[in-house]
Length: 247
Image (cartoon, rainbow, N blue to C red):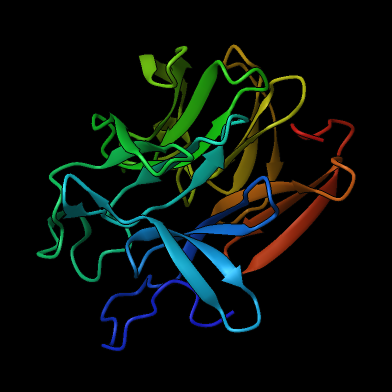
């Protein structure tokens, strides 16, 4: 699919105009974070690349550059919005309209709710199997962490806390906390500096899948025992005894 993240006629002057996080809705339609278009969009027609915007403004201001996203079972879409896709200066880019990086919830009726503006660089995002915890990676250089939030009955977030430290690893390796997935047992699989880290639900590091390069995202596939990993310029597949959530 091309173009995939920037569909305007004027040239894009930055280095990251493409799409980022991808998922599918309950009807099997591709939903994507588009850096260049600064929106969350859904692919309506594969033949002609027809797309519709699901979220592109908050408080009448353009979003920064949506990064990653996850659906809750009730149809709510949660996504992160750091400024990594802005053309020139990211956090200080002159085209930046919002004074913060947000985490949002988009309800099926189109209502966009800001859940937190306290994370400088919200990135990967995933629910625990019972959807009572939302995991978010903060890829802020020298302060990188994986965070956990309680999801309350109305879908908002409370009790934000550090789930695991990222800076300890970022000091020694290339990369930072990025995409997140969860298995049926509640273990957290987190794209990390030169690896995928596997954490127990209490934040204990159980082990790692070493890639030796910057590692950005991951997804369960096939029968739920295959983990696909995007790392630098390669895509890897590894078979695991664990089963991915929602399989």
